[in-house]
Image 1: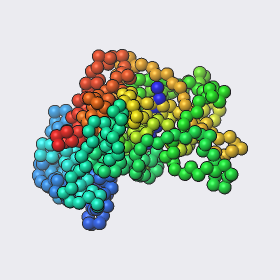
Image 2 (image 1 turned 90 degrees about the vertical axis):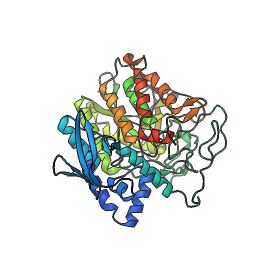
Image 3 (image 1 turned 45 degrees about the vertical axis):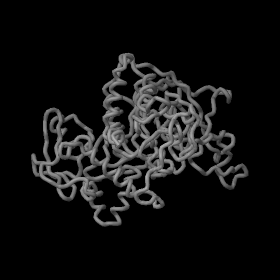
Image 4 (image 1 turned 60 degrees about the vertical axis):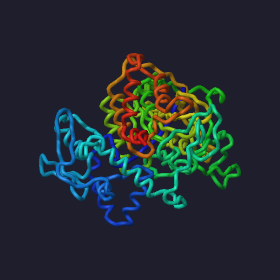
Length: 497
């Protein structure tokens, strides 16, 4: 079994903890005042799903201001609000004005349930009886049409989708037994070029757009040479997306430096998270380190509900995760991310990122603390394999006398420990993370065919079925997953077309 790492960031789309939206939404409202600024925000938002505000929906005629047109139903209580012309919300229960749906929603919910710490405003607030994320999806599609490639003439039809298992990116037909690539508004059949996928494996990084989604061979570590341009062994590998094959401790005559185990609940949540979108996702891993036995126990996954490279929101998301680990008596022991369009081998960026984490967390002497990375590749590009590849890795630093060499990614063996029962934490995270991505243009179309007569939904359920706790072997959780994914508004809108 194998796995992978990742790192995220997003704005007001559907944060798990939406308190940050009070300020961020206010800033966005200010930014849409001028025409040029408005166009810049729209183009960025269509691609990444960031920064959608009520003011944008009003400006584009999706919503109209009005009294008592907004409502929240929560635990038997109903809250009513007015939508103001500037996109802000005035709660009729007081004179308070909120900058975003998320800020209003979390305020109202905490009145009913003081322990409530997070919630998705776009999924909680209704406009004239319908959830706001429905209107956000309409806005996404309207903007996608407005930002279509210039060479496409008005009224031109989309290219016909190839039948069977053909490529959805305008390429040649696939062999009969090859599965279909993951499909979303950004990647599948709705654009003539392959997906624009935000890629940045550091929370402090910036958005990068992957222009070419295709199968990429991995290179051997021995072929990398030096990263120093002045070194005689410099080989010119400058692309941080270059994939590198894993090395194995046994092949080097070494033993794995520590043993590892991971719970099936943790694998289950990682796998579910990585299946939701055609963009890369990231999360952190909480667990415990036993220095006496040199054993690392990975006990819980913490998905990041923000987009890769979103510096502002990443700080708040990381703090929420840090607090969550502390409450559960866990330590940060690793991270995971997805490779939705390629194999689970680490990129040069992944290797450098993992090396930085190892150095930052290792401590000294008795305080030594290991850090591992996991890469999850949910979609095999050449074979119809249902179960995701989940690969654990650790980076061996370069020799001291060769500091300019690349670190060597080492495959780490681990044991999967089947949990006795499904925890409420896992159920909550599955709901929150699916709410976060629903309505975004990179949300996977689960009812689309994946391979032959199987849909992407069946593929997801098949992969999760290998990681169920003992109390879920009868399949109740898989029914919950189906209900969760097929009732998301973005999915309903696609299948109704």
